[in-house]
Image 1 (cartoon, helix red, strand yellow):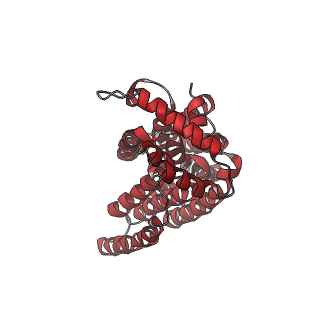
Image 2 (cartoon, rainbow, N blue to C red; image 1 turned 180 degrees about the vertical axis):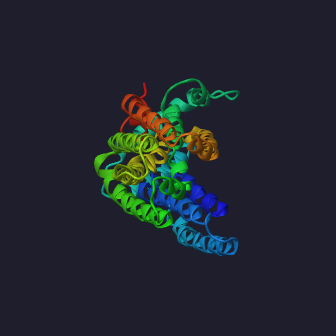
Image 3 (cartoon, one colour; image 1 turned 60 degrees about the vertical axis):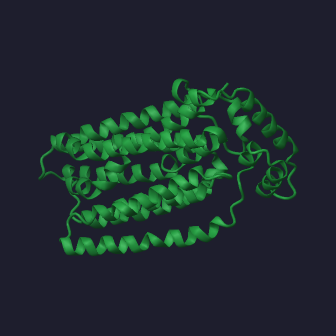
Length: 346
């Protein structure tokens, strides 16, 4: 399964940081494809080794399908206008921008803004250590906002829930835990489909706040249910009700995650980064995201063995902080140019 996970993560990164406009819908669908690889992989734990290997091979074959669709599409993606402007290719830059904005759109204002931004970046250039690069490391501007969102995305514990979904459902008293896990994947696909429709209507910032709030409430429900299960007799009817509540909370958490926190941080990273630092900042953000994902996945089983209620409480505190983080520091990027977004950080 690891190769399929790597493929899905790579696809998310390529879509988020590729030149050109943010591909919101594709990033969201790639995110859910990774999540469902994790869900399917979690169901191989209870299977015999031969069946598990056969299932993993089938997942590998399915992983080829997105590539076969993606490769022909590469020939239709125009170069990034800002990259062309940076290279001094003025005519190609204006032509590419006109294609992206529509042939009937007036791009004169945006062309001037991009040219002025390029002149300012050249004036601030330092061959030893660029001032823009220094901002990534020492200031709380757009670069740190993007990195912070990707770190908080993983600190929410989503991978712990997805990888150990069967174990969590079993602990909640659900007899058909594997079926429930598959159902969780189906629900996530539907929720992500809704997100691709909402993201350009409601805006990135609002969806992030709604998504984080929904995750916080869901995790509060799950943690409270597990705390109460620890002090409730297994023979009581209330015990089975608590199991249902924990199931509802986990499902609600995954839905809330799919509505914003899952895909939108990658989209925002692509929208707020200037061309000259996109590679470096994107690499730092990706590294941070992977490292936190690894830490959460490696510690999840230990934390769940320690206290299921306590584990979900920790994740809840992170998502609650995400609400504050987005409210205070994340700007709305929908329908705004890079120059307008950059001015919002000043």
